Every structure is written in C-alpha cells, then in structure tokens.
Length: 206
Image (cartoon, rainbow, N blue to C red; front, top):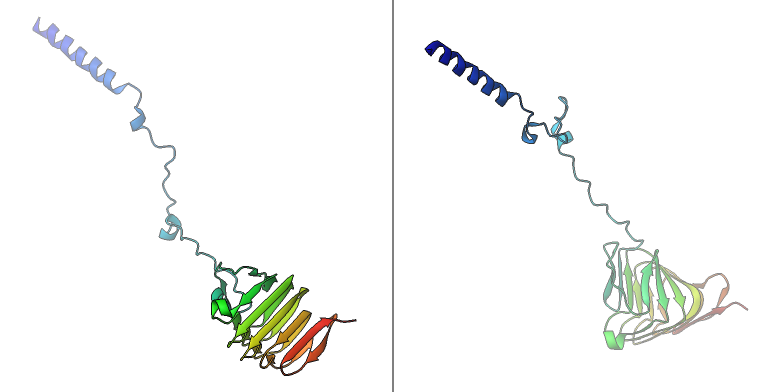
C-alpha cells in the first residue's frame, strides 16, 4: 500500500512539472522585436551620432548699416530691424517714399561701413539733417531707381563718403558742402546738371 501511494505521488509530481514548463512563454519573456544589438565593429561615434552644426547665414556685402540710429546690419548679418519706408533686401537698401529727419532722431540718417552701399529709390524720398551729415560711409554710394531723392543738410556735408557717388535716379542735394567724396557722377540714362560746392542735381537725360 505504501509502495502504491509513493508511485501515485511521484506520478502527480511529474505531471505538475510538465504542466508548468509546457505552456507558451508570456509576452514579457519574448524578445523585443524593436531591439537589436549593434554590430561587433561599431564605434562609439556610430552608436551616438554627432549633432549637425547650425548653419551660419551668408554675410551681407557690408559690415554695418544704420538708419536713424537703428542697426539694420551688424557684423555682416541682418538684425531683422527696419525703419518706416526703409528696408534692406538682397544686398540693396530700398527707399520707398522714405522721409528721414535728424531733427526727430538726432542721428545720422544713413551710415554704412565695411563695403559699398547700393540704394534703390521709389517714390518721393526726403532727407533733412541739421548739424550732421545725412549719409556717411567708408565706401562708395550708388543710387538708382524710378523715384526721386532730395537731401538737405545744414552746417554739415549732406553726403560724406570715402568712395565715389553715382546717381541713376532723380537727385537733388544741398549741403555745406553738398558732398565730400572721391567724385560724383550720373549713371546710365541720367545727367549731372549741377555739381557745385553746395548743390548737386541729377536728372533724367534728355
């Protein structure tokens, strides 16, 4: 009897072990399908990619540009600032019916450094300065466009640049003197009708 009981207990134990080990593995026991080991020859740089550097914007053609004291370009980069009727775009300073007066700003109207300045004139633009020059720069100044620009400066040169002044738009300048520059000339389609110490007039060629 004892022998039979021992056999039955042993059989029950074997069946119990078979039931525990024969089931399907749980989800936690299965390998993660998204996980894979790195290749044996992988280096630390392969496992941790380097971050791409932020690209530097292309520098403008001049280093510094200010309009009535507001910095439009600093260190060759646009600041995102602008002035009513004035903006810098694609390497050109655009004047659109701009009216600038040093009496309300106490600053030089336009000053540029580190390159030549190209200006496109649209509409009737008027600059007025008292005691300071309207335009100052260490390069050449080029004016063009279908509009007109009138510059009046008292007790100061209206335009003071180290390079030359070329105008291919209607231009009337009065100052003391009208311009301090390496020379004043008219662009294609325009003529220099007056170029005296205190007055410069450029008009469309007849």
